[in-house]
Image 1 (cartoon, rainbow, N blue to C red):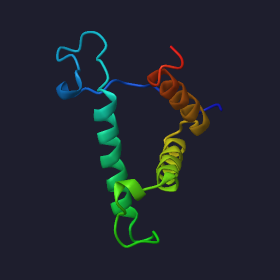
Image 2: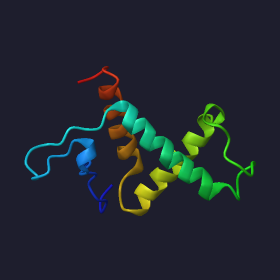
Image 3: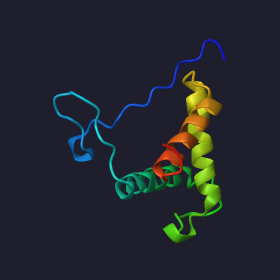
Image 4: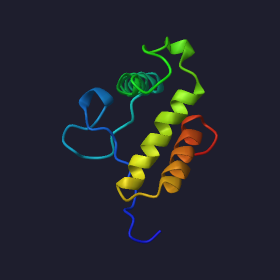
Length: 107
């Protein structure tokens, strides 16, 4: 789509994620466990903010979070991307490519 910003993926800049302090070179990404932990925190914050419009009045335990809650968060992130001038379908394609690479299916 014309007039939309180009999506650029930047490495995390915090030293605890292995970023190069002097800005030289590409920083390694945090490991999967750390990234999953960060995703859990983001999901928890999302659920906390959404608790007044959800069916429950408290956050369900992690093992009961379910696919629909994750889909809701991802959908809302894609809506945010669209409001920022990004193509949400392009974001989805790139995220899928990154996931496949992370899981070792594509390089």
